Image 1 (tube, rainbow, N blue to C red):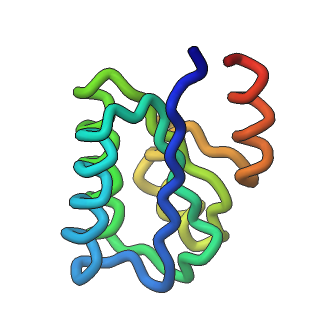
Image 2 (cartoon, rainbow, N blue to C red; image 1 turned 60 degrees about the vertical axis):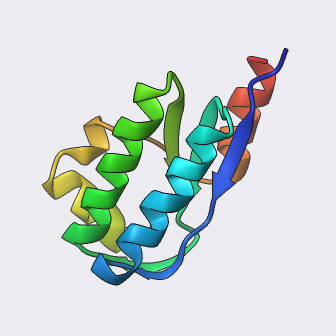
Length: 108
């Protein structure tokens, strides 16, 4: 049976004001027995430390349920934030959603 994949696509600025909503969305996905979660940052223009914190909590939530979380389409600011905090070693980052789909549609 192929894995259940869900895509979360936040937009605008991912900061403290949107962090709770983002975490709730991830919790809802985990409750629906999703296997793989892809966070598509294509429409995110900026992320601060609160947004990064919510992303780390999302990763822990998904892993605790036995799933995997991936990230794609990060802009230069988000890439720098990941590199400065060494989160680029924690998250598997794909250049685009298509790259992710190519890898995970072959493995299923």
